[in-house]
Length: 425
Image: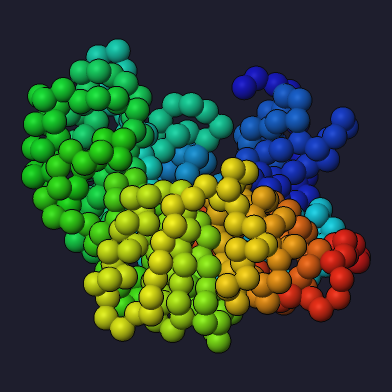
């Protein structure tokens, strides 16, 4: 980036964690700048690159990672805890304000715990076939070569070394790889994307990597290449052997905190539909005291859920249904008649079609879990046509990033369906 060097005063943080200053022609976005900073930035259009901090913000602290400001994995490391929590909670407040939804927002719940148990590393090769393995450089497409990352959980120890070894084993094709690593209770579980079909010699190389790195499993595009022992995840009373590449909450602390909030909110419900259930993060815990019908489009994930439910002692009946809950086949209001509560935890795009159907149903209680403040606010607006918002709680499992989790509790309104209320103030 080349542009004019300009002195700027940073007023606030944006949705992606960048500092925002008021320029002559509009806002200027400067990554790694903080509210209260006076900086020198190289400015081109609405983008700025931080060159020098002339006067630091009173909320500026030292970043703990030497890669911060270069690696794109963390957007906000240098903001004091109080100001950081206010910004993170504010992402939910602003999303609801934009959707014209009036609701009280609880304090931010710190759900980072011991760190990330899941990460995707990128491998890119130079002309000599040597790989750089790590996260993408901030605002760029090249990879920062890493040998450690301080936000990874203890069970991810050895993850980067394993990713480097896999990249070396597959160097001949020189294809850009995404190497997803999950720290299970029985070892590292790895899924490779981007390579395509493997030749026998490459399979043998990966078997050697699994042995040398003591990995639980390696898969290629969700197809198992070698499994030395099944990866195991504990969910309440159950133990789940997940299929390769399946969705999982990024930290154990977040999974426990989200599940505790969900179970508390659904206490007393006897028949629960868990939509976008995956491998049973919530279903298996809810089944300790209620009948659960788990629905998802990922059939291998549902099969793992069902197997875990059968093996776990003392669970109520869990049924599964493979189904596309987006535009093609969301559950309709008649199908909801057999449930007294519904939970949904969709991907980042949210559950627009399902929220519309729920708003027309008679289900007494709905709990929505989301990893996007924007799609959560949209779905909350749809639900508020038939429900009142009882509570909204933000959870911070992706610490130092602009990503935020929410749990919303919606109670059936006895009034006629109405339009969402406009936020006051």
